[in-house]
Length: 179
Image (cartoon, rainbow, N blue to C red; front, side):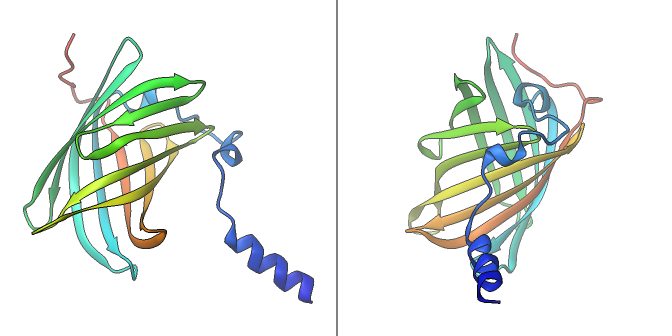
């Protein structure tokens, strides 16, 4: 009995590794999924799990010589708009370095099977100050045109919030990418 209980408790303490998704499909190839017009729809949750905001975003994703650019325009339920432009630069086998204007330093992305994990530190502007939070971004491709994303936000190792969203690829819409 004790061994079973200990196994359950310790098993719940671990976190899934990107390698755990190696044999899952459909395959998540960033150059394929993040290419063209996309949209995102999600909620921001506070530390208690309560949904405190929701948003929609339009994304144009383009690639040139192996480097990806994701131009994201977020519109929140209170009318606030945010723009983030990600640059994804190859850094090895199935890895990227991710940079953006409000990302401190560089993030690291890796993908296997149907999953892509992106770790970075995001500077969030509040009314009077800004705070830096660590983001553990986990994306799972569930069909040709849909990715489910969950992002855990941490400050000093403590969970301070979460973002849950769905990314939808729109191959029927033209994307205005520079040539």
